Image (tube, rainbow, N blue to C red; front, side, top):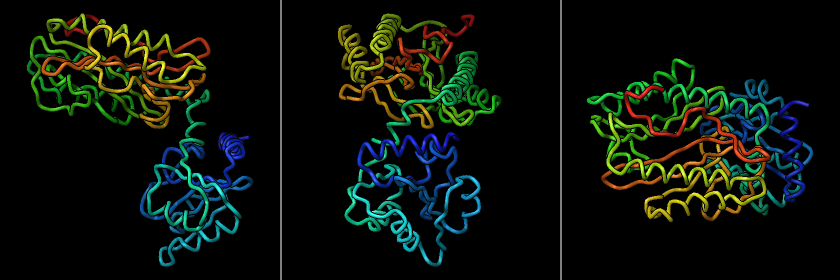
Length: 365
């Protein structure tokens, strides 16, 4: 069986368990996971429709030849001058009665509403509870791709460390990391460089602030490589550490270690967030930890599981997610330590080979 056949079989098993007759996916990560391909998303209705014993690709005729070559499934086509209504009626006739309809939560509204109209009376539910749940467990090929992508990001991060100089702007330092990604054949997603007080903004937009002696710097970078993304955050400083910085960095590192220790197959995701948050709160910095402890990583940079204080998701072997506690002190600096990990039977495996210790400009690697 091909990987697509395996995934269709897994989806159908979940459909039977959840009493679902039809899964409809638009161009995007869910469709890509099933087919290892998805067409460019535009306004023309395009769907992968998976039934209990069938699968069809609904596609505009202008894209039919390409879709047939990639999807390898029976096509239901429609022409621009006719619109997709007839194709959806044809799909409904082929699938039969549907009481529960799984909709891709990222699908365009002008796809989902006509689809629901064609299956009037069906209960709509989101695909994150079915396809998304399957996507959380990575296979060997996905894990290998994520490991390779992480190695690319490590090298880009080292390029950022090497570029630190007083008098350069955040943008100039970030460019060194972008160049490294490009030289390695990776598609840059983000290269955040937040210096000095800008580090207290968790999602700072890299700008023209000039680096100064004594600045702490947050580097948060990621890029696509081999179809899979990376995401890593490390800390650096220009010449020397700000006053009180090492104490806070140590707290964040202890929080990271506590979260990693709590991540085990069978525990709920909130336990990982709870562990990191307790360390930071006990140290007196609870109000400065303003985001979740982690997020899943796969075809998308952010995907389930989400490690929040309320998440009831049961962690399972083969999941991949970030552990990234942080402390952000307004007007002073921010510290976030982020690693992507694979959850193994006995705990987490970190993808990055870079230490989480702060890198002071001028130190040897």
